[in-house]
Length: 193
Image 1: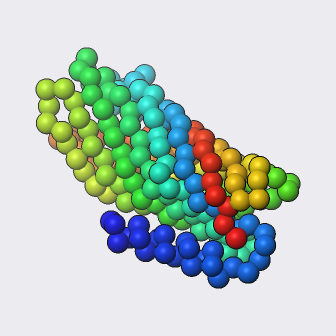
Image 2: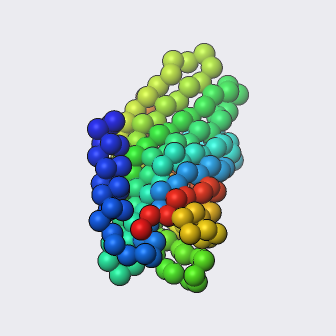
């Protein structure tokens, strides 16, 4: 995993160095915000599956870069944690992932951009419930959403992201809950050339 992260960072820096244009074509940022479960994963869902409550999501690294005519590549390294109420027992469901995919950028004005993003990735899911062993599983996940950028300085921007995140790992005996989250996050990003 460390090698993959180092490889991605080196690639992002190479793109920045190779670009000779003065216009910003990408970003590298950090975001934080609430994570809302929905459907059968939410605490209001089905008795057998529904137990997650509003939690937190943190995006330690979010990246986007336009390659050709508003089309580009996006990536993220993020995690979410939601409190659980499993049949009256407290716990936490945590999800960490590394994702990558395409993006399409709209330049709405000199200061405002909008990116539509679709990513797939590798996920580690961990459930920790009082009086039970901590359980962990790994597998695929996907996310689709939109990110709004406000360019307040030559090299800096404020960002807001709204995404639908889904994964389902084999973490328990019987039917596994499908993790369904709406993540709304805010942060800042460094603008890449």
